[in-house]
Amino acid sequence: MPGKLVKATALAFLVLASLGASSLHAAPRALDRLPSVYGPGWSAAHADAKNTDYSPVTGARDLTQAWQRSFPGSIYLGATNDASGRVYVTTNGLGCHLHALDVTTGRTVWCSSEVDRQAVASSALLDRDGHLYLADGEAMHSFDADGSVRWETPIVGTPLSAQFTPAGNLIFITHIGRIYVLNRATGQPILPPMELIPGAPVTDDTGACMRGTEECPSSNTLAVDLDTGRIFFTFWDKGAPSADIRAMQLDEGTSPSIRPLWKNESLPGGSATSPDLSADGSRVYVGDNEGGIHALDAATGETIWSHATGYAAGGSPSLSPEGLIMPSGGGDGGLMAIKDMGDRAQRVWTKDALVNRGIPTQAAGGVAYAAVSTTLGNDLVVVDTATGAELDREPMPGLTIFTVGTTVAPDGTVLVPTITGDLFAFRPAQG
Image (cartoon, rainbow, N blue to C red; front, top):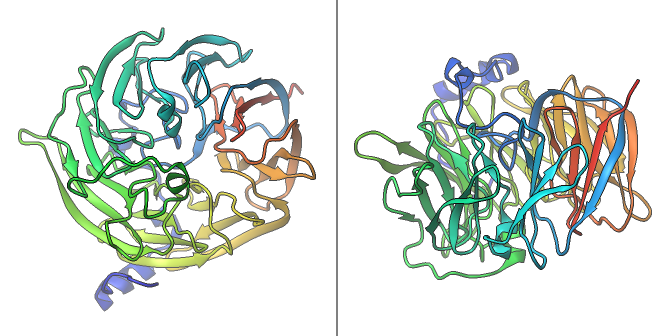
């Protein structure tokens, strides 16, 4: 790969190559199983701190449409949801930009115009206490479960969603490359903002942020290892020939700090994919804009393998605990599954007839949900992740163009928003 880091020693390479897929994707470590600040449900833009786009809820193999909502403007990211039956979606049309809906009916519980239209760049982040965190182009905001504002902290730039840290603080990077760590109870900074490009001007280039190109240096959601405090994110530095993925170490002790660990300059054309972490935290996965998906050593940043998908993905891949990767759609690429085999990637299956038009989501029980192209729009399909066999197909009426995230609620309801401002809900069919 162009710009690949200096190769590791032969001994290190042999150690990596000798690891089997089962050891690389073992069950999460003990600390990951302790109570987390993340709320139960799909509480972050890509499900969790690792950006897996995977649900531990056993997925239904047969769905039926429950409801559909249409909002003014667009939706850019998937919905989030909590254990109390609320769904949260952000939009950029006139009026409210943060909507809380009832998962059963789709009706509005409350909506807020406290955030501006730039809030569409993020999904609402939910904590275990029922609080919400959402940024716009001016501030990070925290809301109570009833929509009232708890606090607001001014920021420079617009984040593309936030995450929680191991100590339960809030962390995010704005699109111009400023890293913030805030106390989630008060909004007060834990440490001064870190400017990755000192003095970078605030720009407003929606297209660049959607594609992860040079004009939007930080255009994805960071991943956090809750065991080690490492954070991972894509970045296009000023004057650099290509984008990179980098890791930093967050210390939340008596003297909080963030320090660089490594960067891998192997993302030609930029990246529209947020990085994913493996279940054991040993690997990080990321895609570039030239049709490559890469597995890196999370400790060193060394490239372990690269795999050509044949198209530039328009969103993050879905990653199962066993290391099965389903890239997002892009161009006319078919739905596919890739398995991390340790020292290489193996294409498990490709369904060229199922033209991928969104971000697929895997769920427990060996199923995945994906939007696929039809003559006039898109359908939601349920597939068997082992074989790619189609188990169910549900139409999504209207001009949906492409979907922007597929999430699974605790009750098994599948939520599919589209770039055109529609939100579809499908519930498990009654036997």
